[in-house]
Image (cartoon, rainbow, N blue to C red):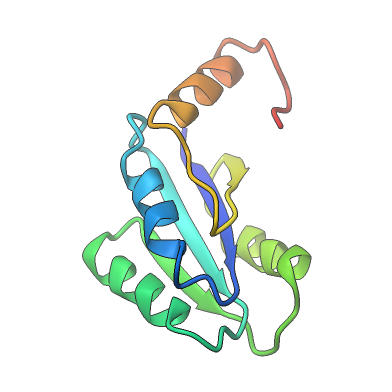
Length: 115
């Protein structure tokens, strides 16, 4: 089951690399990461783009205008291919088994929504 991870990013060059690496470190490997750069003024877009060149599961979308994190998430959803959607802020980190635990819950049909 493909998980689409939606990550809005605005001026997050100090934390973005670690957030992306926490996704890459997941024990569950069937994911795509969609980073939506919301017209960052720092190096965030370049950091995200570099990761996308080195990992085919990562894509970067740049919004035409600064739209805020809510609309950036909507842009990410509209560009997603997964059966499940997960949200990760660009200044947060995931433990390595996060997706494994949550996808297992869905597969066991014990839950319909996790937050």
